[in-house]
Amino acid sequence: MNPTILNHDLPLAAPHPEPPGGALEPTTDRWRPAWLSAAAPLGVVACGGGGGGPSSGGDTGTPAPVVVPSNRPTAAEAGRFLSQATLGYSRADLNALMASSYSEWLDAQFKAPRSQGHVDWLKARGYADASYINSTAGLDNTLWRKFISSTDPLRQRMVLALSELCVVSVLGINAQWRQFSVANYLDLLETHAFGNYRTLLQQITLSPAMGYYLTYRGNQKANPNTGSQPDENYARELMQLFTIGLVQLNADGSVKTHSSGAPLETYQQADVSGLARVFTGWNQDVSGLTTPYPPDVQVRPMVNTASRYETGSKAFLGTTIAAGVSATEALNTALDTLFLHPNLPPFVGRQLIQRLVTSNPSPAYVARVSAVFSNNGAGVRGDLQAVLRAILLDTEARDSARMAQPSQGKLREPVVRFLNWARAFGANSPSGLWAVGDTSDPATRLGQSPMRSGSVFNFFRPGYVPPGTALTSQGLTGPEFQITNESSVAGYLNWMQRVVAGSGAGDLSADYSSLLPLAGNAGDLLQEINQVLAASQLSAATLASLQSALNTMPSATPAQLRNRVHAALVLVLAAPEYIVQK
Image (cartoon, rainbow, N blue to C red):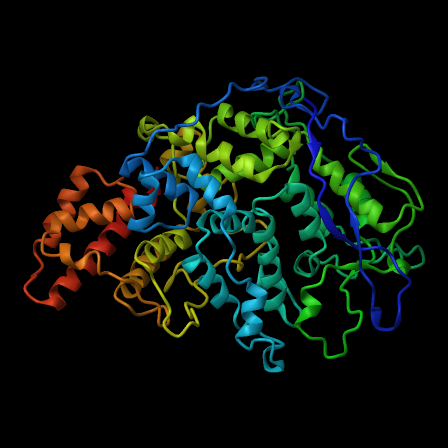
């Protein structure tokens, strides 16, 4: 079966003469590459993609189908699944999955309605007031609101994963209403988290947030008189980070090499320069808006200014766009070329596995996910629902026997640990402000805060190996260790101790009504926390050690019982068997 691309309605921007003030009118069209018929093959995973040089092994052909578990999961199995598929789960969530199945849970999540969008929340809360024009006010609030309280936890888990793959950071957006710019970007990630990756690429490319962050908003064609050339920032990062990576890959993620053993590169500088010509002329849509511009200027898709667009030919990655092709058609062809590249399924698929399940997926796991990315079984490439199913239901994700393998699992990001606690125990903001704030400071908070990465390379690199550790000698990666150090370890524990006790995160407070009746028996209390917070991953030895510590605490009064609950939670949150998600 030849894969085809989903035919979505996308807001496209057609080039217009530049009116006074740069006001441009967007148009809407149905996206379909003119050069691609519905029957055209987009690359079969068994081919491995790319040419030149011998393979470095691992081009394994079409992977065998994975048997999806249909039985009712145990508490430990359900907790492990929810740890991978959500940012945290409650006792009610755990019980519901134990009475259902993984597939049924996924079906329900794909149909779950979305809560109020980030842009709409900012407007409803008054952040469109002119006094906030040059600030980030409200952005952290709406982020924490969604991540903590939303009823579509799989979507939110995917939003966080996508935000760390196709990175935008408010720290790199030098614009008015930048909180609305990033809020709109998050709304785009939410909208397309269960959609098609090609559609997502189109949306983020036209978003003002990305235009500002990777500096191609207002990008101009080459000027032979001054020698200036188009900004190459987005062209480079779009290839390197969002789509195909630096080196050619087999379908299982292994690297293709020259006969000398050196990796085969996916692109050269000439490809970057050629692709950069596509991203000229794109700017914000200010049509009908009066200055000072309202927040909507950061919400509308960018449009093209004809006088700034490079109309000459553009060559990259073996594709040539002829001179005179419109800006919209050139953009579509460029994104199609990247989307159809054989590197994209293993490159993106492997990183999504890393964000959800394990830092070191086997080549066979990557190949299975890559195959589904290439073809969802109905001829569609880039179907993120199918990719999520493949990742979460794969044998390597579901087989609990694999937990004993050193290569299995991942370090939980600090943000995820905080959210695990918040969602497990119904943390709420009575004021509705969700004033958790910026948690970037490693000495006093988490050392990580959503949408505040220090660079386009995310908080940590997918191939990072912490030097001088056992991971190095075993040839394993540990991405999240890149933000782990003495300061961040202590800062995390100190902050979480305050947060668990009800201070340190605005008015955020948890509901411990399920734990307080158990507090008089340290063993029962820890068993409940182990199931709901740690996916039953704490060993008997660890539980015994923690129980001994709790038994030294008095439990005669309500205040003493609450202190026991607080201490038990902090001890579990500090336990290595919790911090490493298996």
